[in-house]
Image 1 (tube, rainbow, N blue to C red):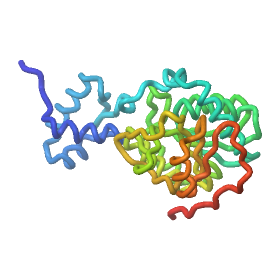
Image 2: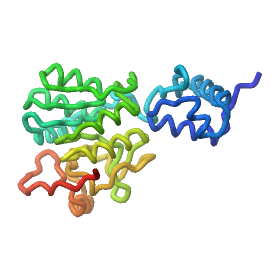
Image 3: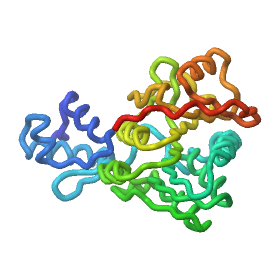
Length: 271
């Protein structure tokens, strides 16, 4: 018997659900794609054989975030640059502030830099940060949600719900790329959903990106440059890019920069 093959257009629509980080239910997928539940079950079985999803009762879950290496592999890349960014980020934090700290290798470096500093209250999607900050005596909490073991992170609607219930003094987010025209870009739809919620609920939104991420593009646009309060990188951006960021009201920091100017005024957030 020939192997079951999903039509290309339907496969791409199912993969869009996977990229969103959402749990996929047979009934909702069947309705959205206008096919029978039996067809969706066959599609999910085929995707499971490819290693893209894991079947669960009533539907399926993504096995991993798309097109990225596991975070502990990425933590071995640009280690000095990420540590330098983390030290600058830690210098922004004051005692008892409420922080959101995202997933990723740069945020892991931030947690290490914060561990011995002033006591904070933090919410994170990233399990290693729970261990680092909790072990150092900070008040830290995980968002909860579907746990992705390869990325040691929580995904899905429970993460978004946890964020919408809070207000943060500072949010630290590492990103796929920072583009002059597109703003913040990401590879997965879940990341942009989370970032858009975070930017609405934080007083100071801090984006962190090594200099090699300037100009990079991804699958999705997340937030415009004008919504960033502070951008931290590992070295001075080009004069043209720095001027553009400053025109957008973004304070740009890197190791060794003299932060003598007053911070940019707090930006208006959506309700």
